[in-house]
Image (cartoon, rainbow, N blue to C red):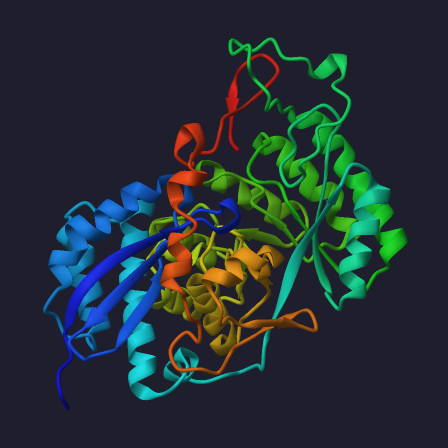
Length: 417
């Protein structure tokens, strides 16, 4: 068989609807044969671009496109200090593009090269929020009426910048900030949130019934002891899972959760290193592994992680927010289709907005509460590079180049976002 080599590696930075995305394009010695992968790290996009174009590009040019694992291992070790979200996302963009090329050469979707389907589509969960239990229930019902069976629910806490809800209603005396930053607008206190959340789920179970699967994201914002209390308090409402209950620094508290309650736990969105997630799977301290696929290194690493988790009864629930390109969502979907231990797939309906579809005209379909592959070779996704240029990244950068603005407690202490 003719050897096809890499002739160019480049970044496509685009921000349709203001969402900052990083796509890697690999060009080959075979005319017309190109592949694309996702390297999206929204908060450090230019660092990833540098890692790809200054370091990975000269390393990859001239190498055989078929030797994905060999190239990955060589590039992974080439920096000596390895792991971390910048280097892992850069590697992901390269290796996902090579999987796209391999699928196109074979004339098959990538899932066929990974063993073939064990399901026809991937059920997804979507996000419903509101300022009150009644409003959350109303918004969740709209999704249920569209055929979605899994709903992540978040409720605003009056006067605070609550994760998962854009509302900050009625600044109360208790929430007024004495921050050292007079312009502080993102104030957060854990106790009001922890106190109100069980009441939200009590109302939702009475209103939506027992058959709808409810999920909730703590987003690592609360002290570990309050998270432990919350997991116990929510047990009776039978969540599908409680997400990111602890920060990576606090994961030893998972042993206490396991000893005290049966609330299912999903964790992994912030992980980038095998030493973070392997022990949690091995010791069965989580129920769902929820990594951001490009941040752990790409499709190949995630496939290995899914297979490892299968042996311990841990299901997959890959991170799938709006700040993942369609190539990244396709990689998630192809993993979902081949994993016997698939749990659920997060998905943002924003991915089907008009501006996003300008940039990505051919993408998987959302139907019956699930994501369906296009069945085209490779990832089955197409990008319009001219359209991508119409949404430059610098137009969406703001003052912080995509960084998350800090969240502070009322006394000025910075807290996790």
